[in-house]
Amino acid sequence: MTQDIDQIVARFAAPPVTEVSEGARELIHEITAGSPAPAPARRGRRLSPRVAIPVGGLLTAGVVALTWLQPGTSASALNIRQEGGYYVIEIKDLYANPKMYEEQLRRYGLDVSLKVRPATAAFERQVFPTAPDNSFVNEIQGINPPGPCDMVGDACAIGMKIPVGFKGTALVEVSRKARPGEKYDITTPWSIKGEPMHCVPFANKTVAEVRAMLTERGVRISGFAVRDPTADKKAGGVREQASVPDSWLVSGGFLTEPGVAMVMAQPTPLSQRVIDTRNKAEGCAVS
Image (cartoon, rainbow, N blue to C red; front, top):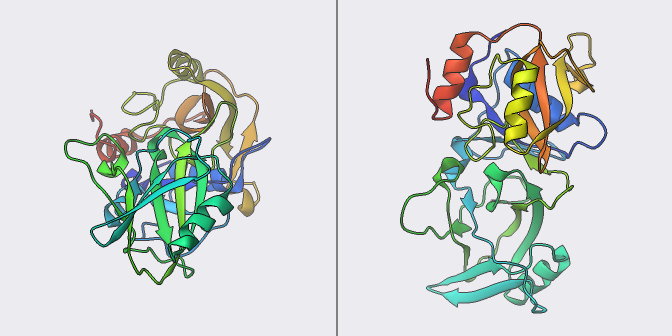
């Protein structure tokens, strides 16, 4: 079982509830199967209710992050000011009714909607603006702070700005930290920068060994995703199991909510080439 892990992607996934979601199945399939993962320079189509996001390509194409303010006590959900020919926007209340965002933006003549979604750590505080045809809206920009950045794709903006007089229509999906027990709308492999298993040598360790690693990081296992060639194509070639033998080997995983992980396990090991390629792509040591 091999895969060019250079093409591992982050995945906007429907939040798992009682079984592996379709988005999660596709994420699993892309990590463990041999088929190449899509790597567009920007969002080309919406895979409702999730969309593929390359870890490098889209971030460098303009995905930005926001340093969110704590929920405010004001009736306004957004802080909007005009500066240098732009509307500079900060979100004061991440849990406000989306209609409140829209009403404020309409007052400034902006046909822009905001959708806030709970995200795993690697994608907290990012924004992704698209037009009705799902193309990336370059006019909506990030405001970058000086100094180094420790976010995925080095995207560490401290706000976003929209040109005064912007006449386009845009949906801006923004991501926030999930509350305890809240399912993630946006998730990614747990080995990506910012995730709990980044640069941790978990690949080909036994389930028992990885369970201990996760416990040390405050994460418990909710279930296992296992490749199943007989599974329906809609299931992405995987099935969910409550348990697998502790001797099985771990190939990957992802968090479904804060402190809860789905583990990908199998009876056979990944090749060292696959592990090294993945580690190199994620900025980790190779053998």
